[in-house]
Amino acid sequence: MKALIYSVPGETEVREVPDAVIQEPTDAIVDVIATSICGSDLHVVSGDLVPDTGFILGHEMVGRIRELGSAVKNFSVGDRVTVSPAPYCGVCASCRRGNYAHCQFGGVYGCGETYGGFAGSHAERLRIPFAARDMIRVPDHVSDESALAISDALTTGAGGVTKAVTQQGRTIAVFGCGPVGLSAIHYATIWKPAKLIAIDLVPERLEIARQMGATDVISAADPREELQRITGGVGVDAAIDCAGVEATFQAAIDSLAPEGFLSIIGIPHKPVSFDIAGALRNGLNLWTGLADVGPAQTIMDYIADGLLNPDAIFNHETTLDEAPALIKTLMTSRDHGIVKAVIRP
Image 1 (spheres, rainbow, N blue to C red):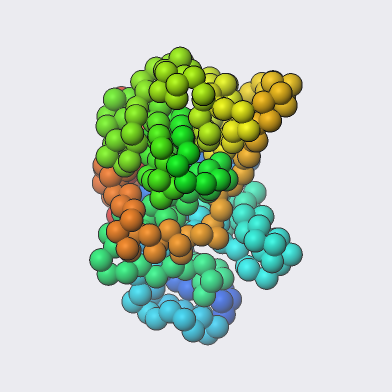
Image 2: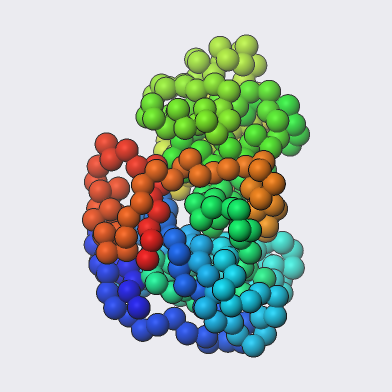
């Protein structure tokens, strides 16, 4: 089968590799219909995230079941499915506490031995461990793109929102309107916010943010003054930092009302400073972490029922053979205009 390999820092290539095969009775083999490039894939390829190389990239996927292990009874060959980016066993101590992102036997697809050694989704086929639990059936009327969003962007954005938003009718600010930020904005509409504010410097992304539910948009390197104006000087109840840079982190902290919540789900390239004394004075709440894969089925139900439609974040489509050039473009250009690309193996 063909697969996209992370070969050395800064470089990827498409190679012929051995077919994905059943290794355990709990496995499934899926023909990949669509996969996509995540920002964390770019972190991997840059050499910032993992030390290992030579593995198949990718952790976002929708596909059709080709083969099932003998223990997988709740799916059939031919079912269209998606998966969470982080396979988890469901029975270890971490999973029993609901802490699926830190499963003792899990990891992340397409991130090398550092994250469990699971081959990635940028391939013609993918082995799914713990398939009976981890796969999510895709209803016929749900698009490949919407199912693909559940694999990471929408699940991650939803996790950040859920940690920061404690009740309906709150004022929410999302810093950074990449795929995860746009997904956070879209999922936040479930909470019926009083204000849902999108912050980014790219006009096209702010327009998509409006389509996905933002009530206000801010295009400014320093949005603090405008946030104060929009909130009447009160500040926001919840902020979600999806950019992972010093400037957005500081602006997000400063924008919070007393007792406000900040979720950090953007991956920073370098450490950021933190005024803990100021946070203590205002009773601020700070959370950071990996995607919460537990609610993925609930998110699929929202999409199936028409409450969410994340298709708008996908504005480019390509083939597996063209993926190395696309990754180069995403890593080196700021003017590519791509929000999120669908790859069709």
